[in-house]
Image (cartoon, rainbow, N blue to C red; front, side, top):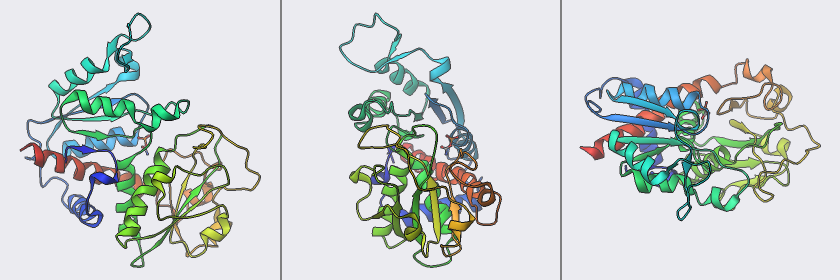
Length: 320
Ligand code: CP
């Protein structure tokens, strides 16, 4: 694996999940694989889970890890060509990415979208330039439009906790006070659509009108603006807020209460409730669910290690 950016970088989801669960059973079995190899993690935005779980995964494989918070500790990056750099940007991505590639065997990059310029965000300009100029394998730590390590984690978690062969999985929009990216729901949707194609899940998306995701990510999903109807017989409910794709980055008022709580849980097949975290309690998801027996959020976050570890393992195997 040279790049981990989207579900298209994976052939068979079941095999990847099986390999991840084998690493979970024996975390330190491959400590020699990453010996004398360095992982560089580059953050342009905050992170708790992605940062720590990816470091932990790399250490389990015997790698050395370096982390840079580019937004705080690095030089201000210029990403456009043909620009006379007489403004606030100090270093061009051409040099910055190339230099980081000299120090590291594998790089990870986190960069959120602007939520202002849809075209720049959805062409993944920054991520693609980073890949082009660094010359080593790159793992996305969440980009403008996708969060593949989170989605792989979510598939691992569903596989571990399912009680039926093909569970019903519902991605349920939730309220928020800020405009959030579409990266997590886009990514979850494209992974679940592929999982549905491979016979692993039955997938529904529920959101209020105006919050349609880009069709690029939702092919094959059932889509509804009726949350209560969508929750019927659900085995897993994946709660997440996102801002509008059509009216890019906009937040519309929603009259109905879309927060997942115990009343809504009664409509489901005693569903397990997931969220990528961080979560705003009693705004996106009720405390009674988060603190109750149906919540998978901590187990889900814990599985971030095995998602990162299986991806790094595959990249290290290609370096040999
Ligand atoms: N879910 C997730 O990516 O968490 P962080 O933003 O804390 O890394």
